[in-house]
Image 1 (tube, rainbow, N blue to C red):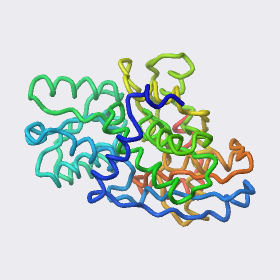
Image 2 (image 1 turned 135 degrees about the vertical axis):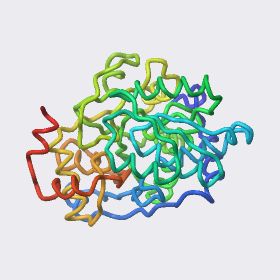
Image 3 (image 1 turned 180 degrees about the vertical axis):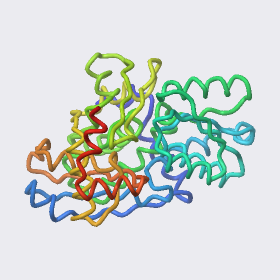
Image 4 (image 1 turned 45 degrees about the horizontal axis):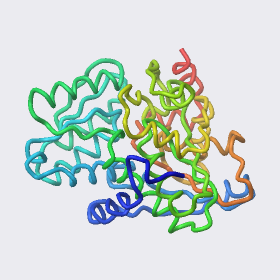
Length: 335
């Protein structure tokens, strides 16, 4: 691993951990007897859905916001989001006495939009993709002088998310494989850099949905590409990576050992297992590590496995339908 050639350093992750320590929770790490039995190795769950805003996104948002010069922070911040980054940035901005503007597409679930508004952020709904929302962000940066806080493609965001990797290695020093939800790559690249900088032989596997997996398509193409966004139970993993991506694509290309795709039925099974056996409520994106294990897509090669339950900000009616095994919603997503 050529960490020195990457746009984020291990030292940057360590600095982020110090910067955000008073603003985020160190979330629990719990063994999973059921998944350990299935893989015949210890499996640990990083319960990041217990984070203050219900997802890992608070780490990167806090680090990016606190890294801004005070004058820029005071003018206000703006971001595109599929929901969880917007919620995290709204929370962090409110705590720092500034205002966040969050741009989202019409595909973002209403429960996430409502929570962002509740936190005092200005919300703009535009278009049907993350790329549409990002174009609105760029207009506001130019017109109003707001400071952009990207959801993933930014060194400060990646460093903040990477603090999860520090905690995983601290909690499970002999970990051999880390399963990370993969969307724009901020979490996956940060965690991969954090764990591989300490133990280069740790495998990091990105897990995402079959429907609209932009980073997977980009890695396959060898360059960032645009693909159509589609509804998914793992809605937080939707969105493009940006054709001008300058941080996370190269990091995922260098650091990820594999990317695994999941069907909607497999994601639903992960959510059901999390609820019934782990007693945890997680959104689709947060359940993909469990789903990959249940689907028989993970070979632990005889070493312990850690996976991140990344978020819990699911519409509770949708969650009820999933855990009750309703199949019509899977057909709706497949339409």
